[in-house]
Length: 410
Image (cartoon, rainbow, N blue to C red; front, top):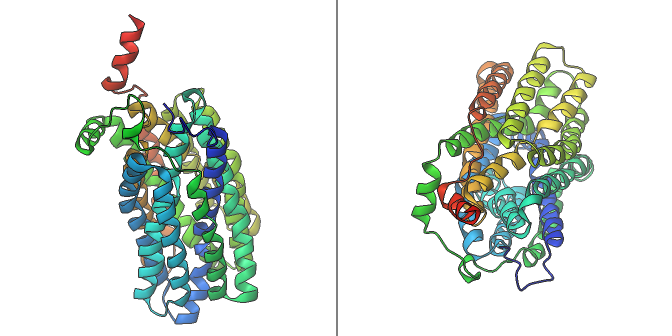
């Protein structure tokens, strides 16, 4: 049953639009951080590892905080998690603009923004959308939300680059903080009745929820597969602009490539959502990770030019966050939607552990070897592994969900 019962103005369509706008703001701002690596490092005399570590820490903190934010959203409504997360996001951006040391950068960009993201992004937002949407439309709704959210990356990156060039990186961070303030009012639309208040609701304890999920092998395979997605996304988002500069291309090329990733992710996310409603979601994931392996391999093997960079951005964009809808959709199919934000948050924790390693290793191995080549080859190999991990997953609901359906069929 939807949590919007008794609150008719919070229709499924309104919840979907609000969630999509929230993702657009939150992820759009977050995806612009790679543009700050070079100017902030140059301004403060840091190595690339300093900035890379802060963003890697952000990914790790985001992942660790996500199950807790998800539990709050599942038990007390997504609105509370969104409001708290948006406020921390704003404070983190303001303090990031003031950071003079690596420690200050890690505390602001890493810890505060990381916690802020846990309350304003995928797991919390998708939980609210799934609970408000009829089962037959859930996969498509996630695809729509993710595709609209990707527009934030497409719009935000060129705008952030122009602002950095004209106003400076510190002022640009304050501008982004102003945009982040707009997320707080959206919490009102995503407010829900607590699960315990729903008619006929059966609220599972935390231990029961975790025990049920951890006993399903497919849940762990989803976690490990999503780890690879996080590795790819963080490495490319943080280090691609600097990698292209190393190859003799201008900063605008990196921004344009990441913008293309965001633009083509609109189509990729929508397509994966539609496909997930028609065919096996794990099969969709196998196809996505296999295609990533091919795209990454070709990018490593061919010479880097503006056109190959643009082609990489477009093709990788089709595969960028297209993993999100089928991954979360599989979790919802296996376990239902009442604990979706918590369980989706646990899967996302693995994504963020991968993101931490992708972001940090990119900077660490660059300092050690003077090149990103090792990490590119790691990315190819991990894509193959992720495709293999998703092969055995089957979309079979747990016994708790099968029992009522079987009783009704008798």
